[in-house]
Image (cartoon, one colour):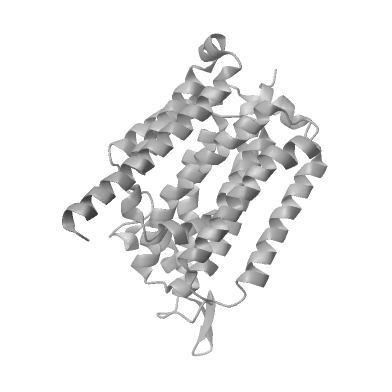
Length: 331
């Protein structure tokens, strides 16, 4: 027997998948072709506006588009979508800080960073889609995989809280596998050539360092997806909800980067909040049978409340600590 979420997903018409995919492609085309046709630095105010727009679009999908146009949609779907979206968006914040380190290490000018993020996110959407369908197929065939995912999330959350090494960036960037493999098998030019990924040096076609940055960003997303994909399966096994919540979180990542990259000190405790979220979601996956007997249909609402509470508290503690430090130093 299929888990409830997969049975529901089976009833979601392919037309809705196609319609949502078309919306994503149009949004990306408008972004690159209309608003960011020329390379320029994305200002903080603009980034705030676009981040707000993407959040509002996601909320509109949860409260208006889904309930009105998707026949299978229920109030529980709205809660699960919002929980998944919040978890994925929060995990994306952690990803943002790693991307900032990557850009800093390779000294990528701010005017070119949007182009890397755009193509990086396009690749991330494709990879997430494959991982979601692969994970759904595994859960559909082997339901016990959910328990494996749950145990993995508990382990990952504990490791994150204990301050494990950054997965994709740091002072030893050149020792990262993706960097070593790329330099070994691909020809790279020494210098950037504007925002181009490919250039010509003495008549020879070569990749620019900006393309290497793109590869590192893509590899980073794969690493973070190993946490985020199991986490979303701990909230729902509905493929449509998993995919849409992931997509909305990723679409907002570019503008979110330009909002958060210069404010890392204000999110210093976010890592610990995310680690606790991962542990709780993993524990929920391991004990869902007993939790449902205890909480019933309230389990979904309790999950959302816990996720929101933990993330808000960790961010509030970060902001308060940073404010106290600035106040004590008089800066």
